[in-house]
Image 1 (cartoon, rainbow, N blue to C red):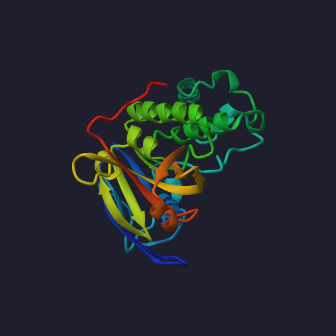
Image 2 (cartoon, rainbow, N blue to C red; image 1 turned 120 degrees about the vertical axis):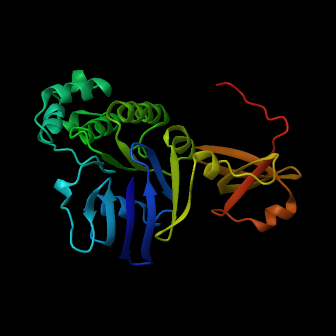
Image 3 (tube, one colour; image 1 turned 60 degrees about the vertical axis):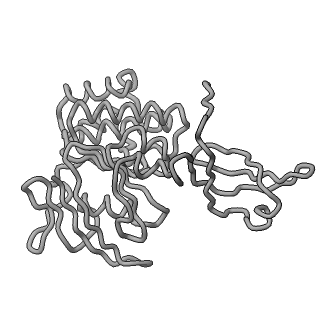
Length: 280
């Protein structure tokens, strides 16, 4: 079991986190921007100071008398900006972490970058750089991999490829993975548990279906979205709404159109007695 009980004073609020994480699981951290997700990852990694306790199995990484430095914590970290060494080839970026050519070869095969092993980072696409960063994070066979929005800058096809890579590495190394994401489909697909942060505290914690499949009564589907635009077509009003990675048009009443504003967060609900699923 991983125990995290930490406090830290931030600019807008005081972080006060109390949670336990099952070792060997994939955990998604989500919540509004600025809620403390990336800060929490950095505290677990030892890259930011905090007071409290971090215990992994029987080993304390942080308590009243001890603070294990980042390099001695058994972690792999994938940063939002990749943090690759520009003057090193793909393979050498991995070998810098641990001089194990067999493991580097295996990881590059897993992320399908064997042919690119001698290239420099500037010769790679964004998706390839992220795959290198992911492979590098597993070079130590870490007990915990911390992934800070690892797929946010990628297109949908590459996101799906990397999602599969994350699951594949999890199965191969039995590593606890804690990743930050705002993508509901991504969270639902690969996580075992979801932790929602709000102003530096755990707001919700549970299974993906408990957190993401929000229902009102027993026969409705419900989604959160943001109003992008509002237009009148003949005698009806149409709201343009962003839901996750999708943009949809929803017909609304004149009364509702007067109540909502561009940029407002809304909930879209629909009865689900006979939902229709279209195949792409």
